[in-house]
Length: 228
Ligand code: ADP
Ligand code: ADP
Image (cartoon, rainbow, N blue to C red; front, side):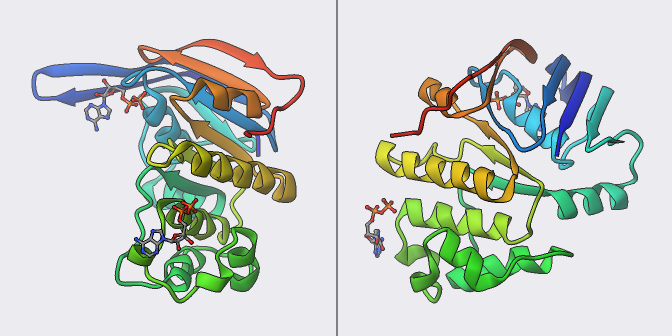
């Protein structure tokens, strides 16, 4: 799904302090593309992802996803939009420790109106043989694979990834990025990836750089480099 944001602003008020997390941020993400969002800590990357994903509201401007504006959606409609279209991946895998791999992924399936088959999804992320393990029995890379399966089983149109490799060593991180690329190619999922890692930019169709709540640079890659 294509995403358009036009002059989106978001201000946080914490006590006396006002923080402009987004200042008239505009972007266009074409359908079925991988986009990375680079920028220093506090530059508004997570806020941008959260307002696109409907887990937070923006103040001004406009976000249009697949031709429909998020403006003025009621809470219930926003939840519906999110459940139907969006998969989230975070740096912390946020798995439920008392549930097995399969049960964790099932949580994602229950939230979907159009889920993919369980076995297929576990196979895609390479976790079928560990479906009965608990999170503590898995490595970090494996836990992130489960988190990706939990997002994927919803069959989302858009995957929003906030520092998906932030807690992983370099090699494991590359494998996770390869998996995201594979998902993009296989399902045509639009994938947005926040990262600190400049190198990850090379694997994306488009790179966006943020600074102090603004999008200061956007460029496209002609050829995509595999994370190796
Ligand atoms: P990034 O993802 O690039 O690190 P964020 O979007 O998390 O940036 O944050 C942008 C700015 O908004 C930062 O100054 C941050 O402290 C502030 N901010 C983010 N979320 C909140 C919040 N819930 N309440 C108050 N300030 C926030
Ligand atoms: P990855 O590259 O996927 O992160 P690792 O190299 O970290 O994998 O781990 C290799 C193997 O070690 C994995 O198959 C995993 O099952 C096992 N492993 C890692 N950490 C643990 C743990 N805390 N308990 C049990 N097995 C573990």
